[in-house]
Length: 349
Image 1: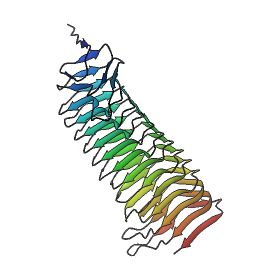
Image 2: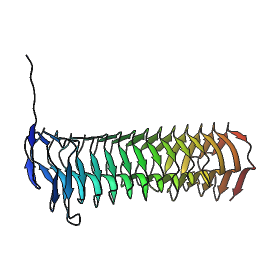
Image 3: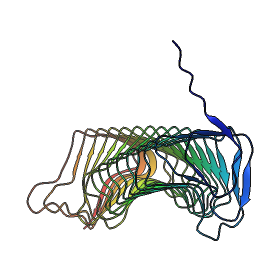
Image 4: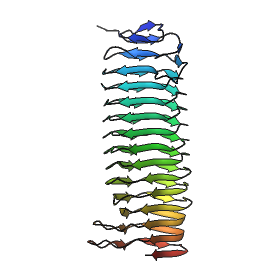
């Protein structure tokens, strides 16, 4: 016995509410309001390569609206010229797959208070504010997407335990990935992050893991760290040919682990830590003006520890500026391999 499940072939109009699975057989729009509204759980909208087009992105409109629904799949859609391409609010467990979302006024995909969504194999580009904005949403997976040419590629705000893996982020005006506003326990792994201003920006977000990414040719920092990032782990990345490899400002005693990375050929400094407590271990750090710079990195109750690193071929290997030893535990620099540096350690207290 064989069961055949068919989707209805439907020509929809702007603003229609979809309550059963459907395949589009024509473009929709230009729409002055929303494109399509999902009105049921557990349905599939297959645009079959057709476009949903807006006409007035100044108004709060979306190409596809999914509100308080679960288990919806959106695939093979081209969405453009709305305020938001796809808007997901509440509910969750949706699958956005193989869509092309571009030239929307605000965000390509906006997710608010919605968890366990799968964002996979989409092209998200030339949306003004950002490709994806994920707000107060947990356990989402963003994988194998091409995301480029926006202010931000992906932003997490107040969002936890999300996976950002194996995407391409390129040519963003501010950052490829932004982890902000107390977002925690998120992982960015296996991404290629190139030609943005900052590759990854972490600001007031804790216990996040940056692992096995290739981060290169960003015009400012490969990874830029700001205050309130306690427990950040930066591990096993290749960070090369940026203005700075890992840069920071006003970390406010945040503790950071930087380990097993290949950090080289960054123009100014390979690693620059300002006002933080760091463990820098087992990295290959080569070919920059400065290997490691510490400014006002006092260690506080946690020491600054450098061990097992290969630190070679710099104008200055280690630059300590207004950096004092920890009050309670000794800082230590041990078992590093220093070679080919014009200057070794320079300390201006």
